[in-house]
Image 1 (cartoon, protein in one colour):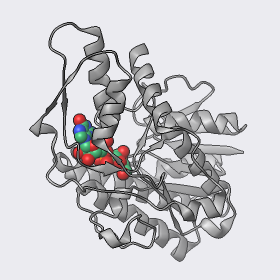
Image 2 (cartoon, rainbow, N blue to C red; image 1 turned 90 degrees about the vertical axis):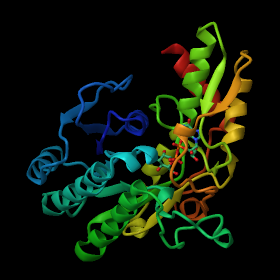
Image 3 (cartoon, rainbow, N blue to C red; image 1 turned 60 degrees about the horizontal axis):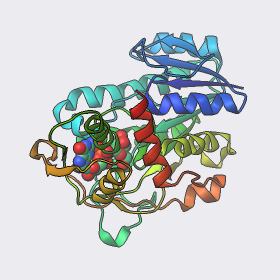
Length: 315
Ligand code: GDD
């Protein structure tokens, strides 16, 4: 079996490539950047920024993947406020190029495609609808959420209109070793590790600690993606949350991370890390994916956080 991962050099792409290889799958990947495939070997990497439909058609005809995992995109919520046009271009237009190319390629009939959205598609939800299931209406509150919601509409449209076998995943917050800065666990962990190595004032600068999020280890997330594409046709044209179902405050993430360090660190709120709108509480309902695929989480939050700190310490 062959799989193509777009954005294979990214955080999730790296973990997914390793996981698929462990399942005996031959993995191909696209990237727009040369660097970054960390410790994944035997990868067939193609430079393709997904801006040309024709070049994607050529690539698909050549590789003949059974699965496509579309991970390429702009994934930072805060950055989407500063780069609105780039966020829409990268997330929406590249997905459209890929779907259109798949429709016109020689693998149209057999290929299964996973598009990746976000809990940010739901936006401001009513307390009555918590935990959020896939039927809750989409009211995104930031440009990133709008871009991902648009992808979900296109995924469904390509299945309804053309029969393209697309499944849309809606992951909630995912964390783990190798995540870039700009996400809360890495932002906190990299400051803690820096303070462990330096003398002087021990101050960590943080943003909103009151928000509650639903965290899952990236190594569990990539197994969920694989299971979604492996599961029979019932999933096509449909949407699946990928989440833990447990609310965790950002404050408790901070204090767990601090407890894994021997440093005495003072916490300071940095206003530049606050966002124009920050949804106070996201908790997902994961019944649908569990019922379809039997997926469940294997990594505890403590294991994930300590793995992230160790990964950064070794950098
Ligand atoms: N990044 C960051 N850095 N966030 C902080 C910080 C900080 O120093 N301090 C507090 N926060 C708060 C944010 O305000 C937010 O409420 C929460 O921590 C989580 O922030 P992020 O890790 O940046 O994640 P996100 O929830 O905005 O978005 C992530 O999850 C989405 C799924 O729910 C990203 O991974 C998205 O790509 C993903 O779709």
